[in-house]
Image (cartoon, rainbow, N blue to C red; front, side, top):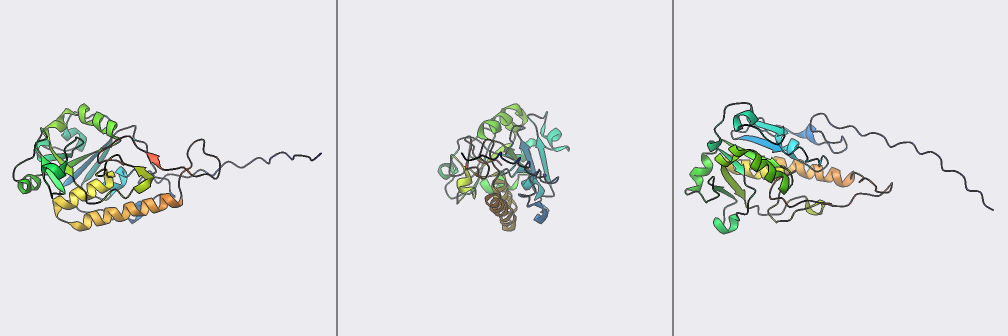
Length: 246
């Protein structure tokens, strides 16, 4: 009879620390290469507290790209002023819209479309977009972003903007978006602010960071809970969302 030797006790896997700046694992950190943009149009990112995709999420990275940006996690704030920490008029701000408006139908040929507080196409689009003082991006799955929308009534006072990207998200198979225009928070903010400020280099810089993150993720994919040692986690499925997230 052959003897079966007992398995040697395996050493526990090394703990991978998180970057204190971007909150990603150090194996996925790309924030050291970010040079903040001196943006004129302010950015406010409101993240749902249950949005926990620390690996592929891009909200914090997006905020780090801009000098004039605020990142908050929570469910509700009494006003735009409270969320920002300074006085602001929501009528001069625009929220990246989560509804069903299709820019290709309501304003063919426009990559960024401004709507009024009721979701109707604003006349004189150039003037409407030029009047925007800041933009608000809701970060989370579609259902989480919808919760943020309805729990912050002051958002209804803001304009709305919708995007019609010319290409799908760089996420590719890593995150399956339910709609062609579904973008990461980083891609959406980059596209929107680049258009509003007429500075193409803004989107170029953000997309470079995003591509770097995705390359690192493919090289160092996290192991899902219950996945056998040595196996790699597969593509993530997302709840339906329109633009943001991560």
